[in-house]
Image 1 (tube, one colour):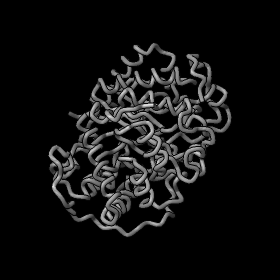
Image 2: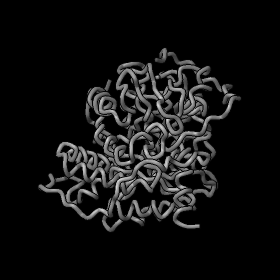
Image 3: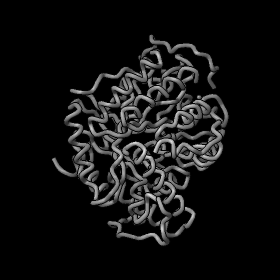
Image 4: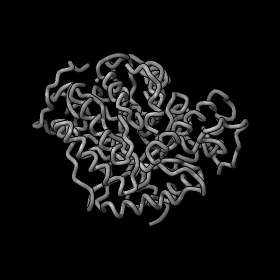
Length: 429
């Protein structure tokens, strides 16, 4: 396990149609420690194809729209609310209003070919500090750069630069294609390459993202699928060959090489989906009650993430699956036992933590958008990934309101905003 807490410093139509496009785009671990190479010959099962994963997993055009029946709180455009007290010297949040700090704790979906007005409004009005390009594009680097630049230009004067994120793993999970973008093989094939080759290739892929205005890749996947026989039943990872291999001994060096290459190109990396999705069967985007009954603290698949964190990634992404041996009552991203207890306290990770998408996933549909946002931050996450831009007003309003009434939660908001800005400084300079 990690014993230090130095990671943070080490890596310093019309409106409705546009929104629907963004929504559709959104709704895309005990190894034996051996070094057995992944099986190239494994192909997706011939049974009914499961829906492709969603943001943080992938943004896929085949995904259904979110559940519109959830109750929504009444919200208004936030008025500036200055926090009290003098900020410490060197505090990157000095001078920011509460609403501005809260905005840094969100990542909003932006349909890659035509972001809707709701996405731009999330950035300009609700101070959202990160966007994720969702859907599928074959328009290439130049067109993507125009979209990235337009999103950056939506920021209020003086606001920090956006994290512009994407799921660019390879294989089916490659959002950006077309002129200037290489065709990336699936991670399972990448896992058969020499580590040096993968690192070099990842730097090339990262340079392409950088040229397109993307500065954060929600990759690599550090989930371990136990065996080739489990691929067909492991809907979120194995079916799509998103894992680098079937043992930690293969996954760790290849995932780390992928991250090294991205960071060398000036693009942040994100290890996911903590504490692991390799043992589940359901996809949390389209199924509720997805539960891992095996994973527990200290098991080899959790230690795979510990080894990844020693490589100083930009961020860690938390899963929304339920982990029965850690917290049987809450999805991982909503669980303080998973995020604060296991990831931060036990494993020593003091860097950036991002949730998997909590705006439209069936797994979290029992909670209102406002509740999902508050629970995510209270659990210890720093950025709430909300692919549905229409949920941003309710989510940000709820976090602001809770911070005003709960001093401990307000301290968490401050700490998370600092981590977000520190991570941006590390990646963006």
